Length: 380
Image 1 (cartoon, rainbow, N blue to C red):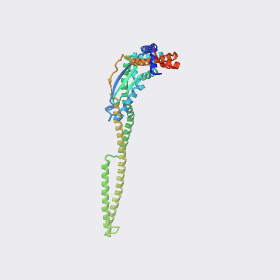
Image 2 (image 1 turned 60 degrees about the vertical axis):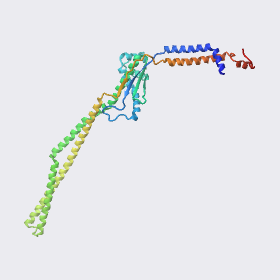
Image 3 (image 1 turned 90 degrees about the vertical axis):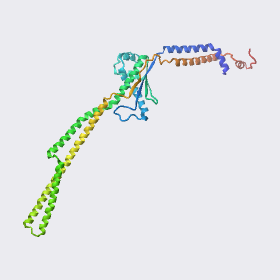
Image 4 (image 1 turned 120 degrees about the vertical axis):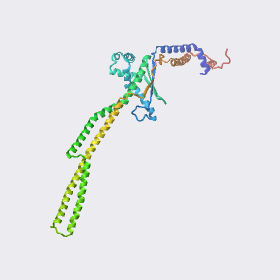
């Protein structure tokens, strides 16, 4: 089929083409008018990924900012946030949502957790969050059959997301504070026990200033050592004069030497005993210091996490609240009319060609020459 024949067929079947074209557009308009209207409204948020809170030492790395924002998108679309959004809505809004998404029996049990969970799933299905590109602005859009309800739900999702983000930020600190609080009692009792053991040992051994006592006894030991050397020298001097072992001077010198040796041995044991006591005392003191250090660190962590758990600021701010839009986003008149026009042309041309195929007519000279097998010389 050449173009000339195609145009002749369309001209001959023009009423059919026009009828189908108009009927298709009319049907499109009718369907569009009767289709349920859907309204979409949006709330925009600004998320500062650099400043999480006053307790953070560093913000989110720039390379991780994209992943951080995508994580926020997933949080907004979570069931937890949807349930919080439902809790923020008024009763009449919940009833409107129930009328749109729930059947008759479920509408009467809006406070049932199972019904709330199902409604949260429906909200997520009609929620869309635009992931930002080179931006820290998120757009939360919600679609429903009521323009006012769409705006309220979009704002409720924004506030629920802020509340959920705050909970996610402070909940670990709250759990940590509770854990450290439960441990502080045991750590305090352990510190008191170590201090009691130290005090009991000092009282039992009569230790007041063990270092001074050790210095005194050590000095006395050194003095006795020097005295023993002098006594041994005197004994050798007396022996060198060959006075005999029974001589009184020799006996006195020997007796003095032995006495000093005995005193030196006793002093040596005393010094070793004091050193042993000091070593044991050092261990007890070290145990007390370790227990105190552990308790102080746990107490510091408890106060730190307690402060963090009471932090009530987030890095999220509402840039624009949802505005009520009275022009429906669905059905889309422009798209539907354009689609209806295209389909009307296609159907009209298609039916014209089909009708021509069923009732073949002579439209151009080539049709006649093909039919009788004789070339056409002229046409009037």
